[in-house]
Image 1: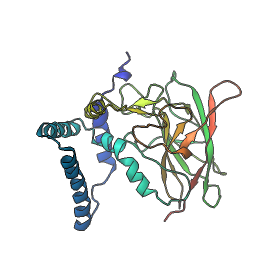
Image 2 (image 1 turned 135 degrees about the vertical axis):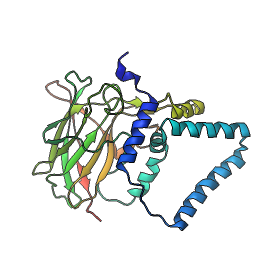
Image 3 (image 1 turned 180 degrees about the vertical axis):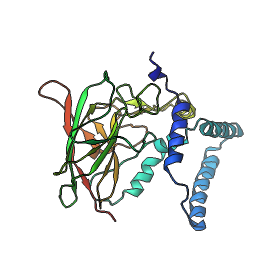
Image 4 (image 1 turned 180 degrees about the horizontal axis):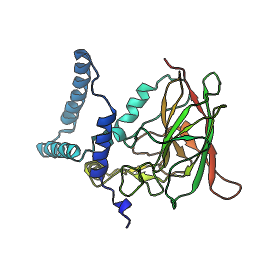
Length: 282
């Protein structure tokens, strides 16, 4: 077994927590009324569950033990991004014009190498997987081409692991930021990612096993699309025929985000076209 396959929930969780703390500000000022309303509703929902389901002290203490373990292994970003972020994203993008968004997930790292299009993502010389050409155009909702727009892309490798969150993978492997040309077009060479299970050897895995759930996410590309005077869109693109499109553990799949790559005529891999439409800045 390669060292790469031995990535653990604790290591991934700790790195996700570290990345979150370094990239997100906690200086948000929220009024007492809002805090009281949200906290009261969340606590009330838990209390109602306890009463309706007649939760025992044994179950209650098991929950406390589990919550402590989630914190100790740094898995709160994983837990929240898998089971809650899809609802936050739905609220954030409700009524938004243009391309569909979905969750960011816990494996985003800012500052990836900037690449002129046509671009090739950084990868190992013997990178496993089917070569994939991902191309398209970025326009405004009015149809104007957006030159110089950035397509920030990151994804798992053919074994389902992310650089910077699993050992023995180069720092920026399969991560990059491509820029559109003067007509708004981009072309990115990469490999098609694999479906993967979220880490199951830690606290989140214990919950999954105890509940009899599966831990799979369908294969996907992560993207952030940005252009001057337009709203940033964070999204994921999936692949047709993936058996987990309908039961993604993170509940992040939307029909508009499913790709259908075709074999290239020269037999050197697959290619797919997907266009992005950005709404004006508010």
